[in-house]
Image 1: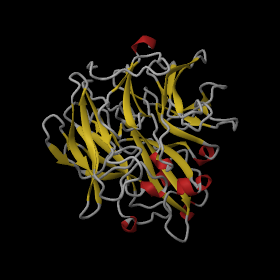
Image 2: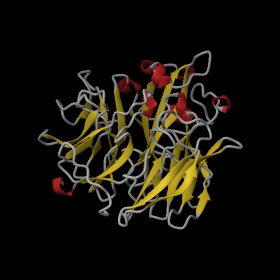
Image 3: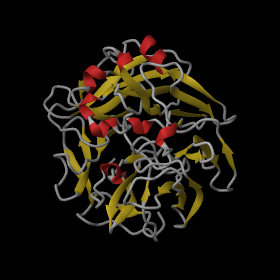
Length: 419
């Protein structure tokens, strides 16, 4: 860390923490399952919003910023019209520091697509598909339809004019999840919604799926780059097209996570609607790439941290009494969970500040590593500031978002002393 990055010292953090955006407003890193720190550890890639008081209109321009952690310098390396306020432009590093992927939108056709950018030279290549998550080895991109993601929940895809977006009623064969080869840029539909419902074992247990609008949402490679977990959401068909079904009638939305290999085999519904209906959120891979962690109200006694195998077997709590929250990840030591908290969850401090929670899975001991503010003045929940704590590839550094001194800022914590 260059000495120009100021230390964060409020509430006496238990680990060293630096603000890496002291001079830039409106910055965020992507999500809790992807680090903005480059494979070498030298650079950090962020999205900078042009405003913080409203959702983007189609065509609004945001910026891709790369920070040199060694020199303390930063620069805008690209602009994009393919973003929303929770995930920005879905920035993902590839296999090395010369591969940075992000979304854009062709405003002549309103077609979303991804760029592969070398932020060190400025060279870039247009991909035939879009990016939600890049495989850690940099060979592949996976994404659902980014334009329809706002049908169930805004904030995670791209903004295009609503009147050009069609409806996907029932399991269809022309919508689902696309895999893009980052060398050639070629893309293909790796899993259609009709195949997901027809082939998953165990199946997706949704009564009368033909009466639902169904869309892909999250999509994630495991750390080994050889398996996918894919999120499918649906809500009952309405007479008129519906947007933000999640916000308008959360209890009507149904969720499922399916897993599969990249050749389309071993297709399983790992967590189906019958479990999600109890209440839960934020699933991701264990470091071993064979198990999934998430928050789930598994016994209807409040959220708990749970785990499940990729084939849907072995669903169980990790800790019986410890409440779940935020965006949990299991450390590669398999002995600790790191997570944050939403400001409205019981594990928050109730004053706009939230903890980064460090929980020992063997003893149940919990430490507050950092306490920081994430409450912001915009009343639109889509504009909320989620910390999204994300480990770098060495499992030492954690990047997270916060709202400090009137703007979104990004922080890096060094976890060395507690590991």
